[in-house]
Length: 547
Image 1 (cartoon, rainbow, N blue to C red):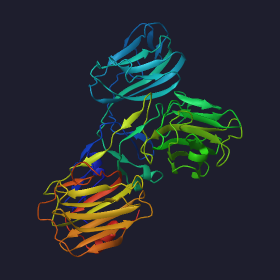
Image 2 (image 1 turned 180 degrees about the horizontal axis):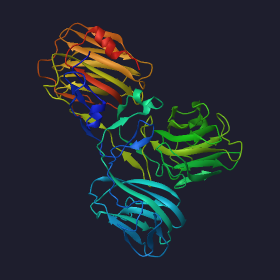
Image 3 (image 1 turned 90 degrees about the horizontal axis):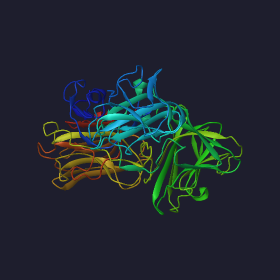
């Protein structure tokens, strides 16, 4: 049995809050070797049920009586009442509110959610006290509303429900406030959707910084412009499991489109437009920028395939329950805000017409980001939102590693074939002594190299068909004995070179080894660092690509 390795992720480690573990003994007892992980902003992942979730949300509810089961725990200003399981406002003036103390901490981020049960006029808002106009979650129609707010120095610790325009009449329910740990790693199941849970093998998701430039990613009735279409909000369950997906329906036989209002892009810059879609009664949908003949892509929602592509690239990915995420990567041809990033209902592949009045699709989770590929979904509700890069490093210590021989192994998938260096390294904290595997600047290439005392003593490369697929990669190092394996096959060997002296290696990093550069952006199902050089048979077994 193979022993003596680090492993990421594994169930004991995930449950204990760590994402890296070390096994010195029986393959069952895990000793935590936690990474220094940081991101500093909210971020989503796909859970084991295929639902899009926010990482790091606490199980502790900070609101008392958020379901309004009793007429208690809330301070009510004039016009507010609690009855029959809802909080109700009958109208009035002066932005009246009801509130309670929830014990928030300045600088921390919180998830706020509430349900509008009825509304006959006006606008309601939920916010933290002292933060009026900053991070308010507003509503004008029935539905479930969710937002993420970082408490500022002016926050006074109360949660407020407020008549926001001196005209609100309606009822709300299920008010919730939960703290979000923005430094929680994302254990993602995107590639496991559809598998039985006992067969699922999640991955650690590491992504670069990105910004969703669309200001209302889920509410197509807010700051979106329609042409020959209507939007009906909150019609079916969205990919995050809530009733927040909107129905887009054509009112003409000609071009039926919707676009985010005021979105300005820079000419010559590459963007990726993505949106979650589900067929209503219409089979074809398109994404485009300015002109479909230059930047448009078509998608077949019956068969889950990409049709005509007039841009850089396009993808379609199934998310369960007949939902697909479609993407169009294009180079902006104009800075105009008219048709800068539109969604269109079509009657056929390559067509710009709806063909029949009443054709419809369901829409949720729209993004435009300055990337050559789509990253994980970034929700917005009133402003553009930036998700910081994930960083993971500094796991292990000198006693954990055997510098004189061993194996670095990882099961990895790239986010994109974007021709950048992305590295996983065990090192001494510098670039002078390290074992490295990752993706090279050449297309579809996986590589390794070993640096001892500043000199490259062994290296190898292998071109793969698609590096966004998972590959099992291993590098063996020992004096005059080096080998490179991928998916059960020996790629290359080297029989000359003096390896590190004892007690040299002291850290595993998802980057080049030192200097916060060449970060590994991708999906990692497993990382193992063996304390001995495995045999050829063991390396073949370790990397054999059996699901």
